[in-house]
Image 1 (cartoon, rainbow, N blue to C red):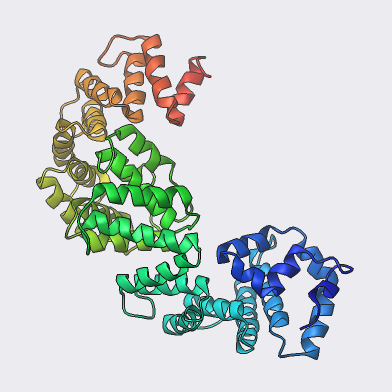
Image 2 (image 1 turned 90 degrees about the horizontal axis):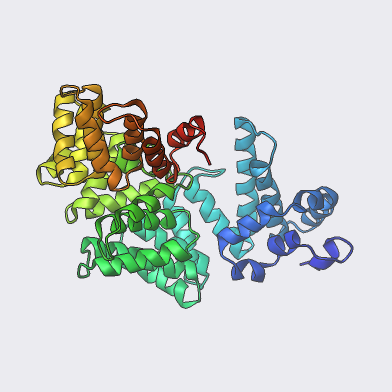
Length: 453
């Protein structure tokens, strides 16, 4: 292989050349870190523009040179992540070039090219999607000790992609990567053990273990799939006081602020709305909830929530409503709230009266969102006779628990004298409580009253 230093800027190696052409450097880094470095390196495009001809000459002179083919594959991939728009036909052509270059480099036993080729098969980049071929390539590399491949093969076993699903084998491969010092492998293993402790899968049930495992993942992982799921579950643990001291507001805040791309559950899981998603994180979340749905009521509740709007699965509101109603009849206040929302405005046989009935059952158990919605029913006369005084009473119940919607609407009641004496200062007090939690409508009201910031 040519001296890489001589191929760079006047014998001055740059980060792009090192990353693309130095296998030892590539293997020492987490794969996502390598991709991030390549994408943010602003010198990459100017470097290639000035030196690409030399790389092509090198490649043509020695077509068996794996490093050159691998470099050209990465060069092609930049076109997919650049600033200029790429049309569908051009995207297909670029993906096919990436696959071709990676395949050539892989045939010359370039480890990272073999790994990237497996990724192409897994995602269907430049070729037909083939999980079996991807798993075979991952296995070949994993057995040679390539930790990135060990993690990827663990993922295959965890998700049942190209192999039979086997969580024990998945943890085994994650453990091999962890034993080589891979924090990513360790945290994948920790994440699964947390879930198994929560749902009683092969281990004793322990909310404390689940909480501690998920906290590790939430704090230390950068993985875009397991980190948001672990963080979301931490929110629920605080919300219900499972494995930790109960702090409903902290739980709500964690759930609300956890909104990475592809996992936008946020406060919708509490207020009654979830956006659809087919991201890897959403699919994994649904499958894990499904796994625990016959052992843990919260998993069944969250599975129904996913079915409601197609989060990680196909949308099936009838099935979701059936699950929510069953859990509601068992006395779970969050499920009572959700089935109330279905009857109130989400697509089962609409009945504001039934919606009000379920909201009331939830509210009577101290559910702050149920209390807020009972207040709304009384305020607007939906499913019950309009009564501003009762609306204000229920808004207060919700507001005093820290619910920002109850706080905002109680502020409205005081501002307009609905069910309570008109009192701008008291209105501003409740608006500010809501605004402190980021509710924009409350901020707008304070601005109109000249009390913001």
